[in-house]
Length: 242
Image (tube, helix red, strand yellow):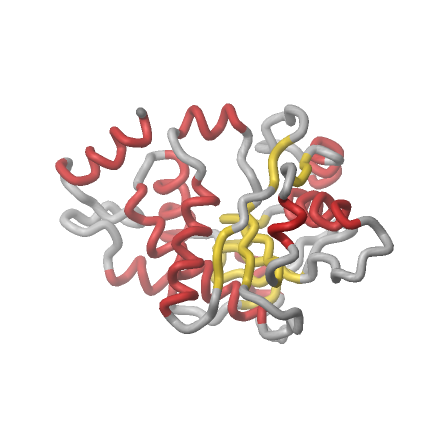
């Protein structure tokens, strides 16, 4: 019900830019340029967790980009999903060229905790992933969302935890839902999330997907991931990666 209320409220309440608060627009030109104006880059946290796929990001997590992600995730500015999904689609496409597996791109979102989804009234990463898949299809790349991951046990709130504590908190926390392995065999898997911090979530998601087939599987492991944003320092340091 809460999600429906936010959808309806967005149609009748005054609109302001999620990045800067400018009235009468959900995303102004200046904030849109910060989100979409740069080239996607390969990024990596330091230290890099074992098993982390190659990650591409659309932008640095600062200024308008940070405000837009928080407005969508925490303040229910659901109309921003399209713009954020467009940015994610660019990051997905940047890494997908190295995938040789047949079939469409399968965007697998990192799942939010159930209590977080209940509190927010929506799953922000899944919503952005759906928008990204639609954008990819509109621009000629077959893609769909395969939301096959779920939390198998409760985890602590990640905010405030360091890299090592985040890895320990998430170790073994994710699993593929029943029947998910069959869905994953229908295309090229790309893990997606809204934000990369330590990389613990994406590394755990990759482990869970790779565990479905076991070590002797002929299907290649998860090799690519994409996020909307990453820490500004990582985004700048890796600006020359291909």
